[in-house]
Length: 286
Image (cartoon, rainbow, N blue to C red; front, side, top):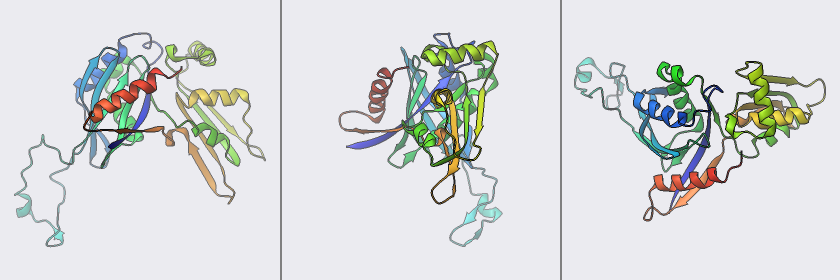
């Protein structure tokens, strides 16, 4: 048996584009066709690849590799010194070949506006933050921005992420940052908020609450706002623990990670991911 760890990203369009039923499939198809490499950290680079559409679902891969600078300094581990020019002349790596490739599958539900991806499999991994950075980098390309506007990506937090923030022993600061959710995903409270933001022509709602003397006690309205923001934006809390040390928690630093155990003799990892994604998203309530 083998194990996969999967994470979830919520993808939301600007309100003026969100009612286009085919927008999500076109967005990911365009992102794939761009083949734009995105710097993730250091020399590590990411790319969207192998994308295809099947009805209300999209299937693709995240490629992660090293984009080495061949003309940078090299080290000779045998002689324990910087490599000499004559040694560097022997290096022959075609510019289209990149080392240390890691391939991680993803599935996107166009109707649920959610991307589910493998965050870890054996020695291969891609954190939710880096997956978000990769998508955000591609989606900010002028070709996509001009067609689809601003696209907001939220790492889906674990179920108790907000509760852990609100339960901090001495909550001193609470920051709620909310971006407009997809209109067809909304419950009543979110619909009211969406109408208000649209009427005010607001792209983002930011609420910051600071305690006076005792710890914060968020009321029902702010708690409800935080519940919406954890799925469409983020919530940050700052407080102190029992040792009087400052503690900071964010919903975006507490990703939901599900585990899949599958039989590699019976199905591929991509099939196991697709099956789990279908079960998780079909059962999800707005």
